[in-house]
Image 1 (cartoon, rainbow, N blue to C red):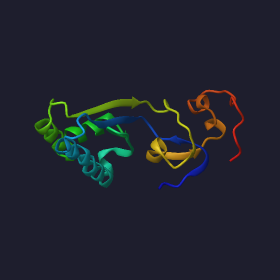
Image 2 (image 1 turned 135 degrees about the horizontal axis):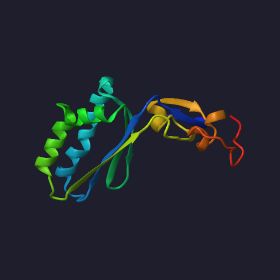
Image 3 (image 1 turned 60 degrees about the vertical axis):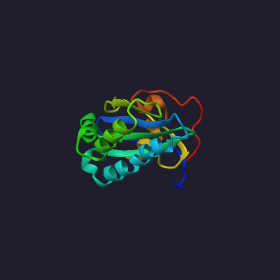
Image 4 (image 1 turned 60 degrees about the horizontal axis):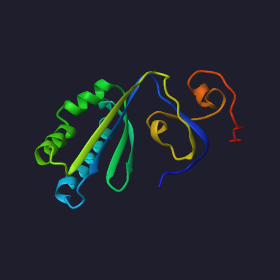
Length: 167
């Protein structure tokens, strides 16, 4: 289990970046032969991405509920993400297999959302959390001074609405 870091923290990442949310939904629970290969394909892709930082992948977090597996991923640029998705990597192989074995039969759903984030046009806060999300992909910093409030993290000025607990 990840180590909890007591206190309030934020994240910083240099330049623009991409947030990519990708996942699958099991629509027919008993169709194991359909959804298990889709679920396991992500492991090979993540291994490949972590082993090759030049591909532009910065980090991810995984989330599961009863029927869905979701990845929140951070990428250096849309060009990196697109090149990976369309290149001769594990993703292209998995995509082809999905289209051949599942296609539009309805047993397994897939989804993705892509957000292009301009430099400095984001803010985040982590209170008493392990290093998570953007802080894991970029820098994990104390949320003090100019990083104390959401408005300050976005470059503005204001006072905290409630007193910040001491670190």
